[in-house]
Image (cartoon, rainbow, N blue to C red; front, side, top):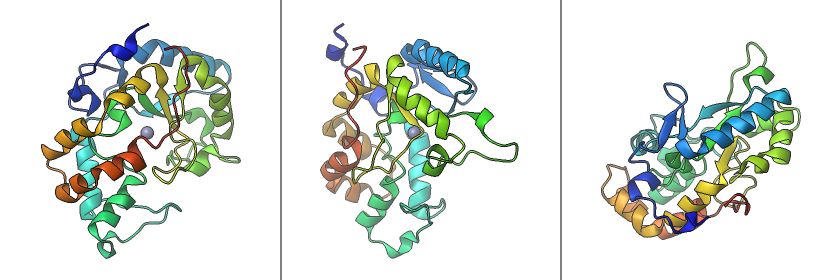
Length: 235
Ligand SMILES: [Zn+2]
């Protein structure tokens, strides 16, 4: 296949269109070309005893911008690596940006914009009164989703999926719930270059815009392309 030569519009890469999205529920959408692979994996996970579900799929630029700006103003909590809330008012501008990027993508650079990336869990593994937190311990040994994590590590590649935030690389924190669909996402990652991102930020209402633009080359290197490589499959 020659999918590598297909140029994706900047609007798709940066979350400013949902034309490529198919909605599974009112709020959960995924890339229309990923639906078969997702359903196949979900079906097999089910046979293995996991009610595999999506907690978060497609996210628009506007949504990510709201998340970002709320963290920047202190309206939403920002945690450190150990999941402890931090007081951003003590930080300089660039350190603030760095702290937010540990857990939240820069608007325009979220892999969730593409529709190829999903946060997964299995509600049948939670106790009745247990709520999904999307915290690493839930997916690690002794956590409620430990068996699911093992199953996905062994099997997700068969369906084209992999974990972009599998280990700490000094950028985004570990996200054992975040799966990426390699056949599409690896192409989008290559195409989301610094120029496209710069244009997107320039034309947005993001807080701390000039500081972000000044440091965007570093942010790009540290947080956006500093991820697990897509396995070379199904491409
Ligand atoms: Zn995610």
